[in-house]
Image 1 (cartoon, rainbow, N blue to C red):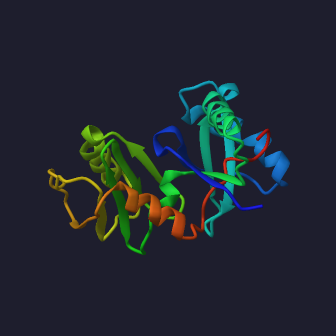
Image 2: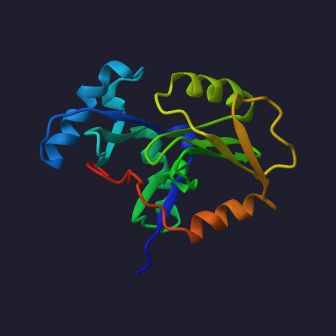
Length: 194
């Protein structure tokens, strides 16, 4: 009888925004694949689309994940008799602050959260390139970056803004943070067919 929130790898979930006319939730979920089709490499038939809440500017936040990946996660959970209440991208487990971007640097990669609804995961080798590209293309630049470092190595590349780096004791503390903090503004992947 407990709520079970499953946090899935950020690298497997694309978070984007869409502008769609007002419609009911079921029609919205049907329209999303076709509204976003031109922005995606994969065939929309192979992807699962989950809608977030509409933002003040009229944009709708959307999470996209491969249907095969969703099925893989759900099958694995079922083997352990776990029935998730919700599934969210690890991006939503990263704290946010007004005016700042947040990064969790982990042993197997990084998670970047740009704002309440946008972010991504990547391997550590590509973090500098992706972060630089994100900073160049974003319309709202952060004032600084909060870096929660769960590794023993300091971030080794320069950025054109201030980085507040905090070394955490270990990756277990990252999981503890997720478990002990309510994460508003998430997009539950368990929508539509799931």
